[in-house]
Amino acid sequence: MITARWPRSDLGLVGALALAGVLAAAVLPDAIGVLRLLIAGPLVLALPGYALAGAMLQPSELRGPERAALSVALSVVVTIFSALLLDAFGVKLTLWPWIAILAVVTLAAAAVGMRRGHARALRRLNVGPRTGEIAILATAVVLIGAAAAIGFTPLSAPKGTDTTTALSILPTHPVQIAVKSDQTRATRYTVSVSVAGRTVRRYGPFTLAPGQSWTRLVPVAGKPAVVARLAVIGDAAASRSVYLGCWCTRVRSAAKS
Image (cartoon, rainbow, N blue to C red; front, side, top):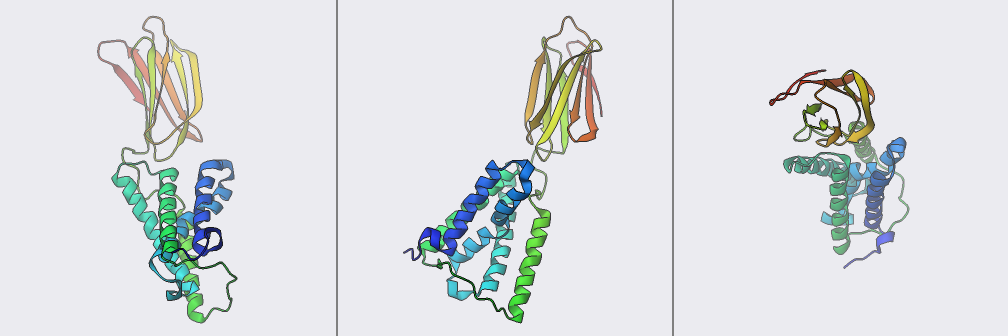
C-alpha cells in the first residue's frame, strides 16, 4: 500500500528528478553542458542508490547521513553494472542508453519502495549532526567528487571501436567515397574530393556516432586520379587522404595519415 502521494514523498521526488535528468540529457544542447550535468548528474551519482535503499529498507533503519552514503555507494554500483551490461550486449556506451538504464532502475525501485510503504513525507531536515555523521557525510562528498571528476567517461572503449576513422574510395562510376567512424564518441568531420588535381566536392561538417558510416557518390568522366581527404573537426593533426590511381579489376589505393 502506498502511504505517500507521488509528488509529496522522498521517493516521489527521486522519480521526478530522474525524469528531469532524462529530459535534460535528451533536450539540452552541448553548448550548455554544465546545466545538463547539474540536472542529469544526480541520476548517476545518487538517485538510483537512494531509490534502491528505499525499496529494500524501512526509513527507520537508516539515519540521514547513513542513507546518503549508501545512496552514493549503490549508485556507483548501478552505474558500473549498467555499463558492463551495455558492453556485454555490444551496445555503444554513449550517454543515452546509459542514462536510460539508470532512469529505469531509479523509477522501478522508487515504485517498489512506495508500494512497500517505505516512502517518507517531505519535511524540513533537522540540522545538528554528530561527529560520526560528519565523517559519513565527508566520505559521501569525496565519493561524489570522484564520480563527478570521472563524469560520463566510458569504462572502456565500446565493442567494435578502436579510436580510428576509416576513409575509402571504391572505383565505381560514380566513385563512392566512404567514411566509417570507430571513435569512442561522436566526432565531426569534413571531406574534400579532388579529381585530376581539381577540387570538385566539399562535404561537411557532419557528425558520426561510434560505428556509424557515411557515403557519397561523386560522378567522374573517364578514369582520372581521385583523391579524397578527411579532416577531424577540432583536431588539426588528425587527417587522412586516400588516392585512387589505378582503375583495375582489383582496387589499388594508398592511404597516408
